[in-house]
Image (tube, rainbow, N blue to C red; front, side, top):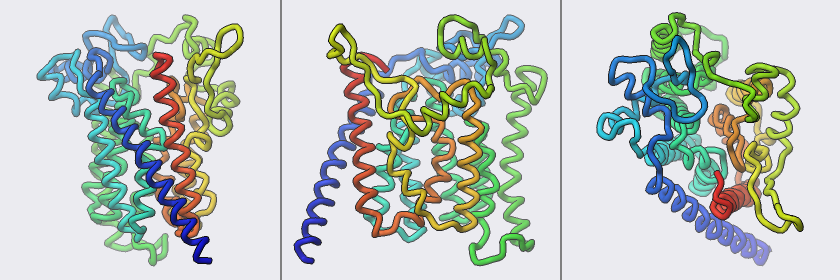
Length: 410
């Protein structure tokens, strides 16, 4: 018995040292990306310049997702990330650098918030350490941070941080007003964040009280949480009206998708933004596609590139398999409904998030809900297998950045 315990301890120490060294390596890669970032790639710099000039349109187009209407160019995405970038743009113009550095700062802050959330649920230091490592280095969040110089990725980094802040303010701070403000910022970065509002309200209720009881305290909490979210929604609708003359027009139909040989262009030209034809591809890459590198040349011995449509979430982040062991309380039940709703809806979308490697980045929309479900599932008895699964996820991210560096891609 004693020999078995000692062997287990040595194995866990080996995993800790190995995973820790790889996480340090990934952190160094992130800082290298920040130091070598090229300007003129993040369209939120253009939005920030427009807002500083009192315009809703932009003066140029970085990348492919620019909308055109009445001879003007628009970045159709929600505006809040541009506000964060505004100081950089005011100082250095639209070709400013610094978006990867901002993403790293948001990444670190989000991990600190999740550590505090996990502590409030009574998780041990060991449990919290591995959970934070899983989020930071074995989930799609890491790749999104590396690509913070792109408009989609930066928006996801911003939204993930503010959803973490909203959950923290409800669970740890018991401050529904600031939770609502934080979720409003997330909504103004990624529109689907608004669906976290009911989950935040459930978290604001005492777990030992009946779910459907109406009390003055609950009504007050609902107003404190809901009013800032409604204000943010009003800002977004007003922003749409300012740009396109219609509060419900997000501008996505102004993006110039054409059958130009690109995958998305061919898809949208044939089937539109949403269609059942996308389900098989999206479902396969969401759940089944493994880590895949192409080998090229006559003998197929030359390392080519990684699949830019990504890797299935349970292959890239296998630690999420522990979700199947959670107990099903009302918080967990609603969180699982949220996960299912996000996942099912996006199966019909023309893009599964690529370009991406060893990730399905749309998972970040529901990952905060999954983390709440994971808390009761991560018992001390399951921690050993969790360590192994997290370490494997970290290894795959190291392999990803190595292959991308060797093949000069990504």
